[in-house]
Image 1 (cartoon, one colour):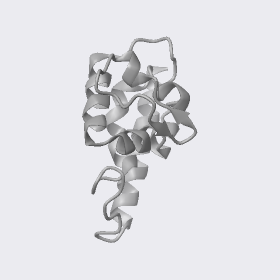
Image 2: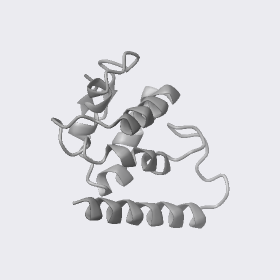
Image 3: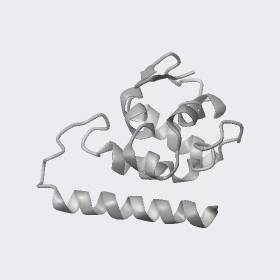
Length: 121
């Protein structure tokens, strides 16, 4: 299982790197996460792989730190990252990912924020 996750993250990294190298300079502009595309920002969720697949697992401290850091940028960025194709390619389920801020006991999480078809608890 761990080897599969590593393989998926390596694949995601290669896809993101290829996309970034192929895109003309400035093509991204300012998105949900500023100048960093959400798919690239999603690589920071690597410590959340198991928590993003199992709503009953306790997120690691590294996962909670990553989610808190991304969430500080904006709830819009956090949603974009959790719903990104990179996160999905890594096996992170959006319905489980949106519960991570609550499972991390983040007091400043955007409770009730609409995240695509999901609402942050």
